[in-house]
Image (cartoon, rainbow, N blue to C red; front, side, top):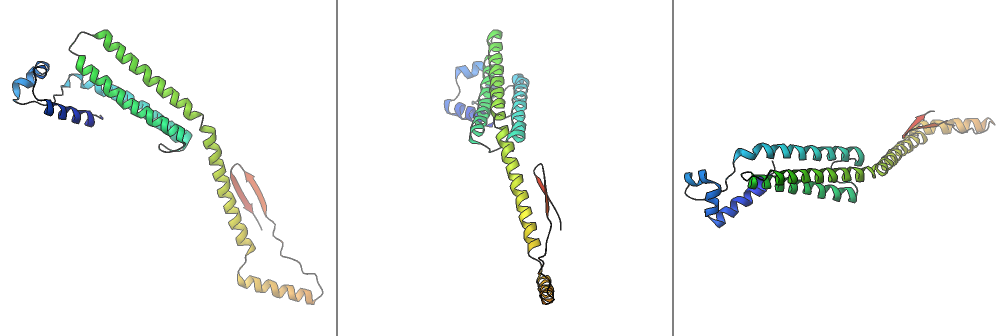
Length: 213
């Protein structure tokens, strides 16, 4: 659930600080069981933690899906959306850790109004950040489509050039036969007719179709 870093920091903190009266008052069951000190995680708030984490995950997956659709990939892309996505995702993680920490520290106290205000504020901030990033990425949608069409047109042009090179460069046997026919015709007094190849280029959408000879 992304708790590896904060739990590690909390464990280091309590090992450095040691056993205190505040810790014993906060975790009386653990204080009666162990002689030293440790970072205690009670399961009372695990459901809230998992629920809020799932909400943040859904928002993050939605943004990644829209990045794939509008910007061509979950990572990279233009500098603006890339930096904005990074900041929003970091904000999701920091906000989630702060919200869960506040819940764990205040769950024994009768502060329902404060808890609801914190949760409502977190939901509003997450929604605003998500919508702002969606509209910002959508503004780059047309640019990505133009770049994609240009890349397809360039690839099609390369294929056409390769086909024309193959047609214009017949095998060596065909060259010698063509030369002998041209000599015989010129000896007969007939005009030297070039080898005419009719190529019809039909452009549809981003593709080029070569029909001929």
